[in-house]
Length: 555
Image 1 (tube, rainbow, N blue to C red):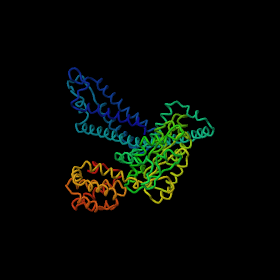
Image 2: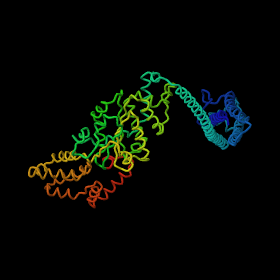
Image 3: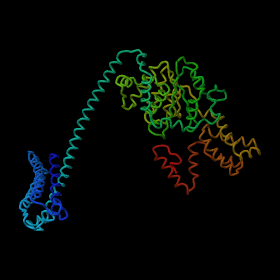
């Protein structure tokens, strides 16, 4: 149905009914003289012409609708309503034609209804008024319903048209991408000097590098490193010193930094401090100084990754490792971005648009190794902590590490527990075992914590030998595990605050399990019956959480 025809019918119908209602109403005094009486036949003619004009508008719209050859049910119903309305209007117009004026008579009408009552009864007028109003309501409601149907149909057609246009656009984009990729491939097939590739203005290269860094970034990229504790005061200084004869054998780390050897393995028990040591080494200026001494390369790129099996997916997967390393390297040297992602760079350089497709793992792996291969003047140094905490293929990860170490311009310092995969792969690699070398650090840790205790100071004043023997006993029983020492020292400090004597502290120490797992079991067993329900609830919350929780989050 033509919306304009429908709207024309409704508009004319509403005007006709409104005008007729005013005429029929006793309260309207239209077309009156200055004396308040209706004038002669001229006034009757004006009223008739107005009503005829409105009725003609209805019929004109009706005729326009009837010219539609294929009408639906809605259009047929509307025509039936118009037909009924026309009959009523004809009756009304017929009544008007019967009105007669006689100026010689003294009778005057004060409103139009008085005139109509001369030819129609009061009941007839009321019935006419109701019929006109009913038709107006029906036609208006039908218009709304018809318009709704047309709107829904139009929206459906529009959705189909949008889908068709969208498919055409996607097809054009796909063809454009294929064309662009073909152009890029053809250009890259022709060898070009690196100077030509780097000829773009610095601001263009900077914008491209910034976009790539945004694509590589993920929210928890540096979260694990931030959570690893800083090395306790003067601990771990020995790692830069030559091995001593009184120590168990280990490879001189400082010499390795200066050597051409590419791989160093830090291993040790859980809780021994591997992550803390790796972070300490990776953030020391001395590490950078030693790395720069022997190299003839122009620049040094250092990147770090700390795997965490309790973290989010990208904190413990191969993809997260590559994202982090590539992100850190390109953040230090943005001009390497064009070498790292040449296809994406060519697209941006030639067409001025970024390739917004996600950088997936296969591309990351290829581009990472390509960056190393194509940058012989750059020394790449990677610190990778927690190989045993990665998810997925551990054998594949170790093979990837070994392959990276084969490049002449890479050095990798890795850490892991001594689990079977790493033990077999890195058995002949320069290495150290953390728990074999941290006894002096443990003594220092215990000493510094006890020094701040008033209770320990009093016991040491009474018996210096026994007090110092307690510290050595703690360090010896720890077997190099920093986490074990930290937990035990906290327990003994609580005893000192309660006024316990040295003999009682020795008994407490002797009762503690020497292994970390056993110590955890003892600690859990000491939870009172009243607190176990709450402890169980907290453990379940932590276990169910998809990410690390803060103290506030557990509250």
